[in-house]
Image 1 (cartoon, helix red, strand yellow):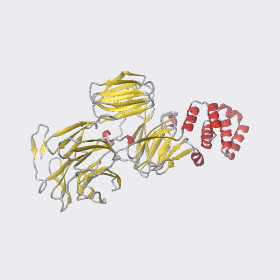
Image 2: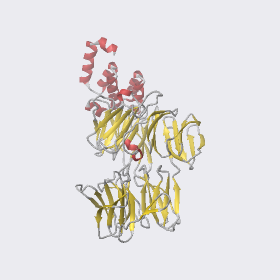
Image 3: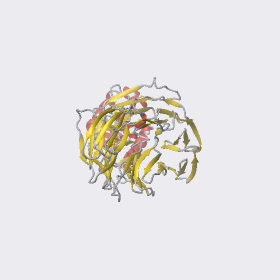
Image 4: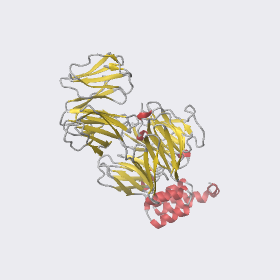
Length: 574
């Protein structure tokens, strides 16, 4: 039955024998998917004409959903999940997902993961190959509804007198027990801050996401109400409540700024004076993400991507194709002078946009764009936050969990492999230290631009970590201390490269004597190796000679002595 926005019935067709159990529009809005008690799964045109019958089964199909690209469908068949591509040449993917009848599914566009709920009382998360990512605790009653948030960072499961908000890894944020009977369906608002649930007693309940917490250095920020944020300086114990005229949608804290997006406006607070924000109007109120860097901020809306200065001036409106609201945090990265976006139609392609370094308004047509092609599908990208503009680096993880780094400003960018089986990466906000997380270890690449493989090995620090759980991720890195979110949702702080980061800070400010003194005091071979490589890259040959000698790279010492004795005038000029 088709109903217009005035509530009038436009057209009614007989779709199934028996009850029609689900009906969903495709993400591109071109077709309608239905499934029913008769075991049929059908696709209809916008005019109500039958396009195709995809599935004919002798058991009822309780749920069916579209893939994010509208090229495949996922449907239930008793306790099995089945992915069927619309092109007849593609192979069907089918796996046993639960011990009971599967009642509900959801497929997210941002993380490409599937969540399912069944009569056995479990919710489970899957990838599109049928590999289980996580499984919930057993609930007392069947799971009757599941729904991903638009950003893909959490989902809600509904059962009898129960709603549970969960992280994308499956661990629970909170549990509520409304007296409503079974929760049959859940829908999110476009901005991912509100949801509505259809209940068995005929009521519709509404919920709002609050108690979101953010930390940066000595600052802590918590959303305590729909329009209220609490901010605190932990060191000075100064705190305040910030009230906004409209509902708060997105919050981002970092680089000495707090940026808050409401339904209508964006507020930029300096942490030194957070009661006097800079304000500008948003194009529309559906902000899905806010990214911060040293010089600018990026706002991702349904209308597109916009880059602003911290004075609220529009710097660029780059266009990369596809729907911006489907971009996840792993697909977009902002540097002080560069924006990188993974192409949503071809995830092997990365668009890198040059950003103006001054207060210049730049239109979408004159942005300088570099397109990088990787050999594998890219899952995560991250731009370095420091260093000269011509040496801007980008780390990327592909679906094989291989880590590569590339200088995006090179004429012929070269992807250099740093490691394998890496789950998560993050750059230091103050140096060129790159930290990665494996299943049982943390790895810090102190000189990721080292051109020689043996130098790369010598300047890499690794530390074993146990009991991280399933799918841990790095939240941030500061002064060699890494914040890790474990598989169960708890956060741990682990020190891995404190001296190395201190050395990198000395080098970035040309404090070579302080760097030497640090190495002589600590007497760590990895630290000396970092100094040797960095001194060589910055043409500080006397420092490099001493450092290479202490790590027994005698061939390099001889080469430096040869350079110093034969071309002194060139060295002094450099």
